[in-house]
Image 1 (cartoon, rainbow, N blue to C red):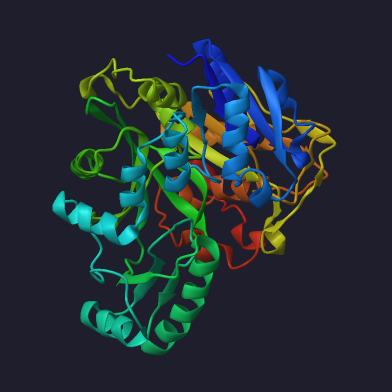
Image 2 (image 1 turned 90 degrees about the vertical axis):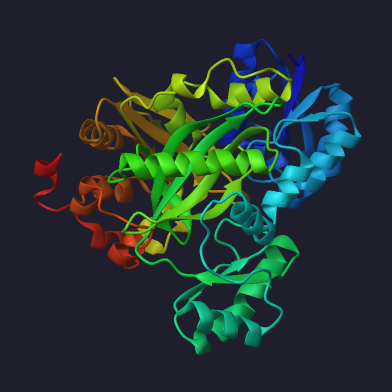
Length: 462
């Protein structure tokens, strides 16, 4: 096991990793930008090193500065968390070249799965269903139109080199396809320095279901069941839950088996997530692999009792999985709400500022992962996530009821947050029934949280 690890991230995930290290008896070194110099979680680190100014490009995305900090601190490994450099194969290779263990998959696996076109090819070889689309990146607009006409409109344009909703555009006809190709290419170039795009069939009214998996360096692989992430806005998840409602046992088994096949085909090791679309007829289609820990990983931790961050570290240290597939049970139901410092009634405008009131909920079955507190200043430089509110109960109905109560207790001010939106969703008939898809929030929200007023019969369904 490692003696010293550098945590190359910030916020709630940095705190989560620091706690995992403390539980394992590992000295953890934190890094921070000048914007985070007063962050309370730094007090849990064995030491903390400033890596640059407020701008992410000069701090948390500054690979040489992070490597330098790791060498100064004499660590054996770096945990990248999620976001920033977590899925950067070049950074993983830099760690290897400097004889520092990267806590995640190999650079080779990351490059393979990070290229969406190559990942689709791999999925096809592993007999994992993929969405019909172009074999590789389209070279021009005419080729994209030819692909769309062959597979049929509507289609989705996607960036070959990235994810997170960037470089993605739907198109329902040739005119919008040509226009959106130009926009998507510019966005992909800006975000990933690679404007390559591919075109695939747009699966409408689909659910977003992902499978968590672990693979050790000996090739032992297990899935940890699925999470439903269908409540999204502009491809950004707001609510995640496990099990996925209205997924049959047969489909659940197919999803989980496909994820493990793909992980093994990629020679993957560490924790990872395989994302799928599931249509109304429960046909499943591979989307992508997230080669890192996910924001929503606590949902899986709650229903399985397995500490995913600890196992990332253990696998990177060469340890073998101590449990088999039959040991991994899906116990009860868990739901996570991402509490963002955003104004839902103002097009989700980020709301940086100082929090002067911060009262977290508690009680049976409630977990709050947060780095925020009364007096904490929400920075304009980084992601607006300030807390993850989770509940775990015996059934989904009980979990929804507990989440309502917990949300009503969660007090944050004067910074605006997404709590009102989450409360409205917990009382919306379609969510309570589990009858949602990835377009549900956009269709129902209509640009304003006021459109999501609770329905009178929602409580009776819980």
